[in-house]
Amino acid sequence: MEAYTHLLGLYLGDGCLSRHRRDVYALRIACDDSYPRLIDEAEESVRAVHPSRPVHRVQAVGYTSVVSYWKHWPCLFPQHGSGPKHLRSIALQGWQREIVAECPEPFLRGLFDSDGCRVANWATRTVGGRTKRYTYPRYMFSNESGDIMRLCQEALTLLDVPWRMPRRNALSVARREAVARLDEFIGPKS
Image (cartoon, rainbow, N blue to C red):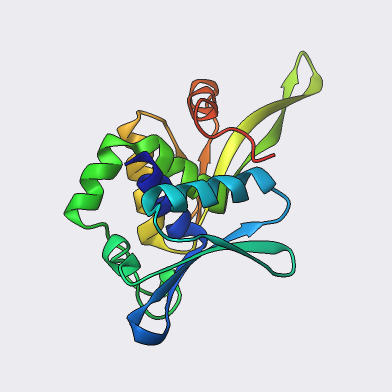
């Protein structure tokens, strides 16, 4: 179940399904070459979800696609459709919602591994007439799909992790306790 929710998060972020001959579908997860650990974890999740199918790595400029062929990928990812995800409705089926509710951590890990990051943010404050700079870690998640953004928000809310929206397509988790909670199962990409 955890492998599926992780793979669902990766699929919603950087994944796609494409139809081939004989109604076989290719699941592709595009992974940035800067993060080899994430490529390995994407491959592990695909293998865990469907262990009897081979998993391939296809190199491209700056990224590696983790690819697996199977007729039933659309059954596991009914969000599949034509066109960019942010231009169509993305909703989880009831059975998917139940699985994400049971395992929100790997789902969030997949989302943040694909469309998020952990960064050092900074702010300045005037203290005693002097400007002081404070640096603190925060997580950012960005996605053009309002539906995918809501799924991320819902999963964070399930875990009581406070978040805010500095822009319509960006989510921030910056409170110390919240960052520490995400560090337990997401952490830096490298």
